[in-house]
Amino acid sequence: MTDRKGELAANLANVEQRIAAACAAAGREREEVTLIVVTKTYPASDVRVLSELGVRHVAENRDQDAAPKAAECSDLPLTWHFVGQLQTNKVRSVVGYAGVVQSVDRSRLVTALSKEAVRAGRELGCLVQVALDAEEGARGERGGVAPAGIEELADLVAAAPGLRLDGLMTVAPLAGEYAGRQRAAFERLMDLSTDLRRAHPAANMVSAGMSADLEEAVAAGATHVRVGTAVLGVRPRLG
Image (cartoon, rainbow, N blue to C red; front, side, top):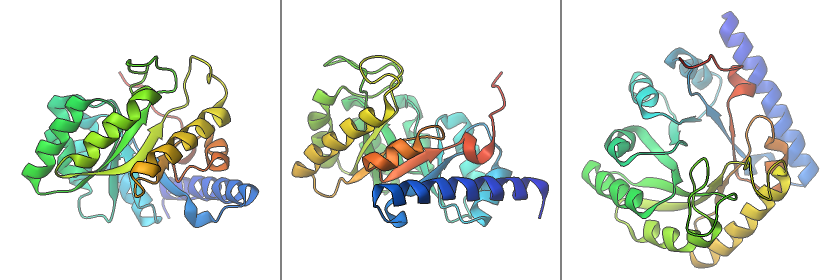
């Protein structure tokens, strides 16, 4: 086993232990939570090792990094999640490799994703990104729609050809009433998910929690956690 493979295996085992313990503490089955490893800034070789170690979901937030990496790893049994703020001029590229876009936060993006998914003959999973720090009608600091905008956007996604409404995603906010209160933020997201599922019962995916706060996300009821640093190590600085 190479040093890097050994390092990633140990880190994955530690994260797995954390998720299992959080599930046990919350009275949930381990199978209820899916680990997505955020591989941004890390090379395709790491993605290949992660796949060998059993990882099936990986995430990226920049198309210029993700597209070549996904192409290099196209032989692997992976689902790629796009989690970053997405410009419409990158949509065609992203639809080429992503199985799920977790950062849908405006109607123009829905239209662009639908057009490209139909053109590519694909069904693309979509999560509405919720900004718990956003004023009504505004977008959040790190993307996302204010809670009041979820229903309208979700209906647009659900009606759009080529798209599948899978659920909701959030990033714990750095400002506003939920700043520093991850558990409360994730519990609010679960309430919003409950509301969404009244109109769209199949949209039951809740993506929340990262390396530092995955336990709070699991306790609140998240179905997917997005973990980067705890698996891959501290990221190299981007130039």
